[in-house]
Image 1: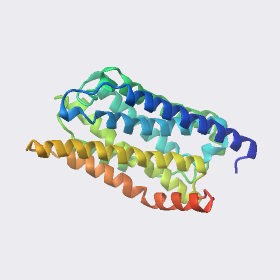
Image 2 (image 1 turned 90 degrees about the horizontal axis):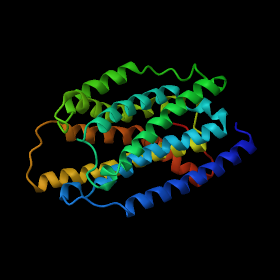
Image 3 (image 1 turned 45 degrees about the vertical axis):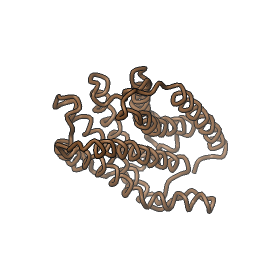
Length: 273
């Protein structure tokens, strides 16, 4: 258990982080310049979704820095998957324009900044756990094998990638990152089931990941609606991959969602998965 002093310090830092994130999102969304095309009119939802995930990782790092003991409740294998996902997607979005929002959040590099924050946060969490939190980890409980999931992600990415960049590698890596982020939560939920629950701050992390998927679903739902209204035929399985990855992610977190909101009502944050 975390001591009271560290927990209070962590709570204060997390409240400040939430306020900072809210201010950033309000400034970014209300000062953006929309793109003239109908197809790009909802691009800010993509930036908002990515910001939710990047903030989730940054929040987890803040919690870890303030209470190093919490390293025992964070799956290092989940961190590895997030680092791999961000490296894959950043290669695509930093070097190719196919998946970059067309409004000012994309042309002004706000979206790129958000993705960079996610990459840096995932690397920082991984390093901090290895360098400072190793003694608090229960390694015998964080043993889920990753290679079957990574292989499955690669296969699904190959089958469902789009041609937004007209280049195999960046298109494949973008969709590979999408699938990796879908299964990244699996090692964390596996660890939580072995430990019997999650602490409050780790619960916030998973809840923000769920919010990320909900916002992404709104964005891609609008994209698909525009395609249907324009009678555009989908020439590959891209949208099947998008919806499949989003639905699988939400289903994986289904038990967590139930216990998380139940714990808020009961005032206890020990969540059996």
